[in-house]
Length: 146
Image (cartoon, helix red, strand yellow):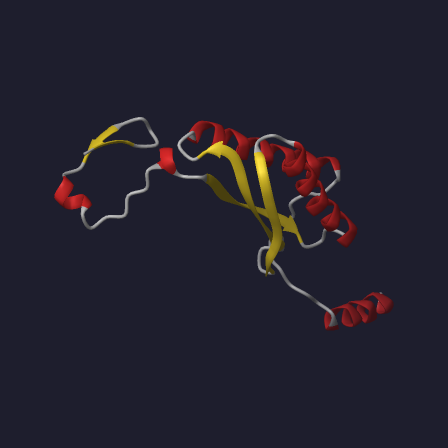
């Protein structure tokens, strides 16, 4: 059996090998749902976080590339200083049209980047993530002696 992969290369796989494989015919498949992950800095004010989510939902509904999206915060990554925002979006292109799907994903990522820049949201990764609450009092005493 002959296949064309995502890179446009022709593959030949013998039928006896395919018997034990799961094969999906993208020409007969429905629409594809993509998972897009975005890191939002934890220092972002809560109103800006809400604005990011709302703007992504608005973008999805107003563009022809997308049918639907779920926008969810799925974790707090304390060591890297960000919230993980996952966008599960169903693309409005047939599954076998790979290039338009990735163009749509690229436009979504460019929109998110432009929105975050316009909102003044910067990626901040602490060089040494530490919290010094007790040390603040000691530093204040040392400065008072000087």
